[in-house]
Length: 261
Length: 349
Image (tube, rainbow over all chains, first blue to last red):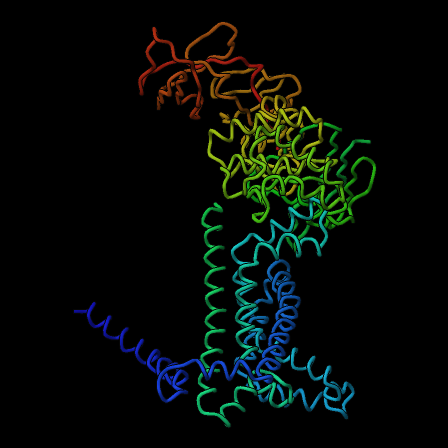
């Protein structure tokens, strides 16, 4: 009886999530009156703006991931190695982007870095792109930090560091050749989450007026009928693709660790 | 000057002084063990030599060079850890060659040295394996090869056998000692296992409360402990609370016992000790002191029989070899215990 109720609750939940997706996918295939087709997808993919905005967002995602890795990995490593008492503080700081809305952050940026400020980043496209990448890095911080910190928890950071030091390694070598390779799975998990966040982000890109994928999706939704659904399915596939890659990498890492007695 | 010279070392963590006035001179090629209970400061001394801890006071010199302020990666000191600390992302060959790659050694020279090291540790065919594919003993051998590959000036071993099972420990300690002798590398070995320290070392430093209580050969440390702590910590000991009676004798209960040369000549309380193997159940030639005793426990352990008997107001433990023609004594038997007065150890503070 309990088992049947559990299955019923699971099915209801699954339907609640799956039915809207099925409806959206079905609608995205219904551009032709005579039957299903991929016309909406072809139309979206043929859009020059789709390609431009998608390429821009991918580039921003890569910059965000690189910045995130460069900031988070050494920070999490140092906190774990030398300042464990600061961990609660760092965790609190990394959680702030979850409680402070993106719109507040971006208005703060505009206020601080406008053309009349001491650092007029919004005065040029490159400067605004840099500002957007920094904003994305902040947005992705909770995910990247947690992923890396979890990865560091699975290895003996202190002893591996000391072993490398006794063999002549400096801090750069230790981070690059010892720590990073051993938390690569965790870093990749954080990177894929960052990628998914950046690809769909709207608020910062729209308010900083950058040609990103999020605002493009919003504009398309205003003007067309079937294409927005097709675009949503594409965005959904990208996100799920990232999740799948996380699962794949995590599984590989788990396999390695199971043997690491 | 000694090859490794530790002078007046001190280390404090806040108000807690974990190493106090520690001095040790180690000759080139010598194998010295730091032996002591948990928290005695032995690992802290080792970590100061490695550079992982900075001494609060004192100096560390290796081959005449003052390394006290040098970071660990510039000391040319190899270290083997209790938890192996092999890099999980590298193969065995990658691990062994790590230090050489850091030093910028040419690839061919690295390959030759890795092959040489793997042969030395008896794992010539395992270069392509990852650490998780090795047993604990194999991992520790690889860790040893990794530490030795860059030809360090000093090898530091931080309880390297503690995580291994008993059988592997015994075989690996013989191997480590053989490799150390082959290479002639100056080695400091930290352990809390007295059997390991006594069986492997040229000298043993017994530590207690951050201080070195005695630094001497295993034979001297075992047979002539300098302090009451060393006597109690190294090996099993029978303690007598005796009273000096002047003229080089002491009273053990009602029996007058001649004291070894150098014993205090006063008439005050005196702590005397005897190793279990110095006691004999019954009378025997050459055992000039005889005490009446009563057997309280008998443990038959195969080739050895450990007997406990009450004598001179204390319970004595003694070991005798099993003899098929002489059954062990029974609990409650009235008997005699004898020993040679020269085997008595007079304990200091």
